[in-house]
Length: 207
Ligand SMILES: [Zn+2]
View 1 (cartoon, helix red, strand yellow):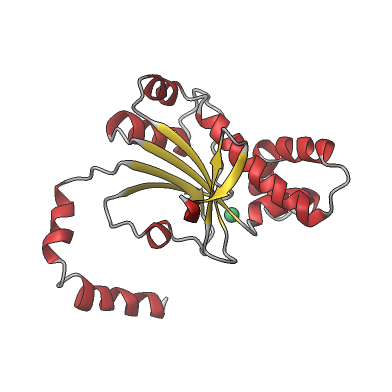
View 2 (cartoon, helix red, strand yellow; view 1 turned 90 degrees about the vertical axis):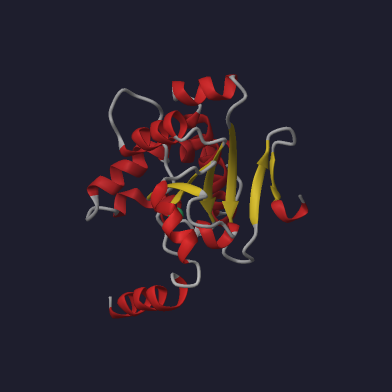
């Protein structure tokens, strides 16, 4: 915590004064064009990897970058989506998974997760169905390859889940919203985007 307070002081002394007008302007409101959905994992910094400024990304994070399919329950995910699409009128939604995701990995061994029953159910409800499909379709692959495929399929499933939200569907139908599936790799700092025409994830650095 001491390091954090020190960092806060550094921001107040060295960063804020230099861009005072910009930061004070943020008080007037926000107009982000992107809803960025990613994992709570401490190693991902959406602003850092996209070089975005404050005010540019509306961010939704949870363990495993999970968007449960639409229901009429007032979940944090649904409320955030409604605000982003209905109020802020974001133009793009990015669902960004990442390599070595603890939530994705834990889904392989949910039986061991007795100390975190809520997290266990969260993963069981939202990632286990995808794992079962991956296990059925890729029986001969080793564990590492299965992990890789589960990560990809999991992100794509969240993309499908996003489309179950009426507010998202309407915005897409009116050409006001585009959905993107990304995977960030810690190994090289690269981001892979899903190309639906090719049916595969491609390194964005080639775009
Ligand atoms: Zn994660």
